[in-house]
Image 1 (cartoon, rainbow, N blue to C red):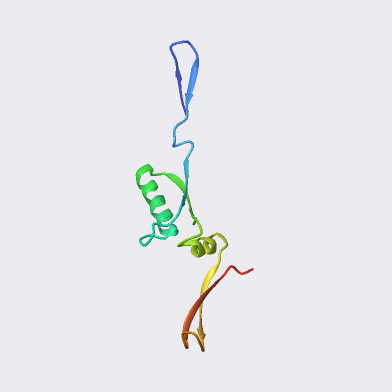
Image 2: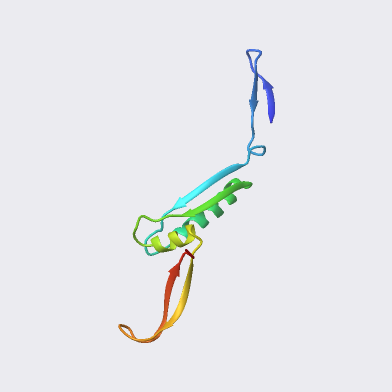
Length: 103
């Protein structure tokens, strides 16, 4: 904190960012066909730390119901993707994925 005297005999206090760390929250949707919402949020956080140095960032993937919604929900609910071997129609045998939130 830096204290200085103004022209009117009153004191003003300037609080610097080194004493009050900056906190940035990035809630980003995906960029269709290029970056997922998770990738976008992480890149924004990295860029903020590169530009501002000491700052706290929180990256939250979001979606609008379209592409990337499943991944955003899984991230928010701490879910996971699992692969299982399936047999039968319509595509025949082979590995398939499913996603669950553990609830």
